[in-house]
Amino acid sequence: MTVVVGIVLFPGSNCEHDVAEALELLGATPRVLWHGDATVADADAVVLPGGFAHGDYLRPGAIARFSPAMDAVSRFAAEGGPVVGICNGFQVLTEAGLLPGALQKNRGLSFLCQTVEVRVESTNSVLTSAAERGQILRVPINHFEGNFTCDPETLRELIAEDQVVVRYVDNPNGSVDDIAGICNRQRNVVGLMPHPERASRAQLGSTDGLVLLGSLLAAAGSRTPIASTA
Amino acid sequence: MSAFSVLVEVSLRPGIADPQGSTIERSLPALGFDGVEGVRVGKAIRFSIEAPDEESARKQVGEMCDKFLTNPVIESARVTIESGRS
Image 1 (cartoon, rainbow over the protein chains, first blue to last red):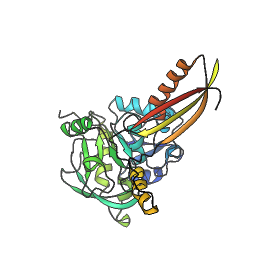
Image 2: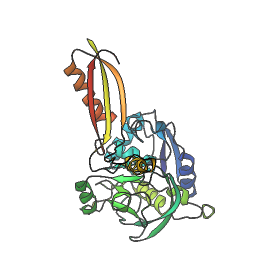
Image 3: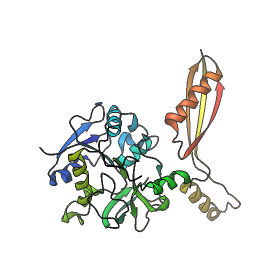
Image 4: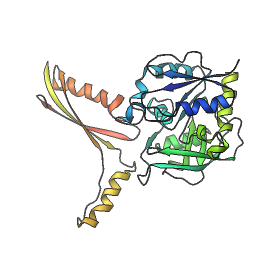
């Protein structure tokens, strides 16, 4: 039995095949799920891929959070199921209230498409359990609205609860405290702006994303909620 | 039921960096417009709504803002309501 990963396809998503390919490379079975169906089917983990769900109208993720699939994803997450939002998927998770904070326009108003270095800050999440704390990963970013923002109290909580999962080594977009990715208190929902699936083959210039996706598959395989250190 | 025209002005909360506003502010002096400060960029959403009275319309619009039209983490809204269709 291989691990089944549901990848939610919204109108305007454009990274679902990249995620599927990278997961297949690791031996998983990707299952693309239509956003209009209120189910995650037989998925052991769920990925919300990058792109421009619903055209990013109003705000990135603002309309996607009302897609029927998101009710199912929320229930899956509440039951401890591993959920990862990549780029636009991160934006959807914040809009849906599954992760705190918001992602606003990059400082400097540039659309950023480049490979950046991120540092693993916590290995206590479904996306980083196989990585090492302090490990530097080269992973591409590709976004206009990746500038993570939250109020000071939320930031204090994120840090105190070890919910900052990855930080930029050289902050490209103005994110508060160099934050590139965070997890929820239960550590089974992770959102990040960098694209691990685009760092999955040597031909792409980096394979550093595999340790992240591999962590997700390990979490999905066990389906045991990871205990909080808090 | 009566018709009301609604204007929702969405803006970034005070303290939230506004890169569009600051870029515009920095550009204006180059065009000879000096003395401009506090530029903030937002969006305007207009629509008509049928409601028993203005208070009810305002309540509904308030809920729309909280649930959908704004992201309360970074944005706030100013609502203007007038009688009649927009």
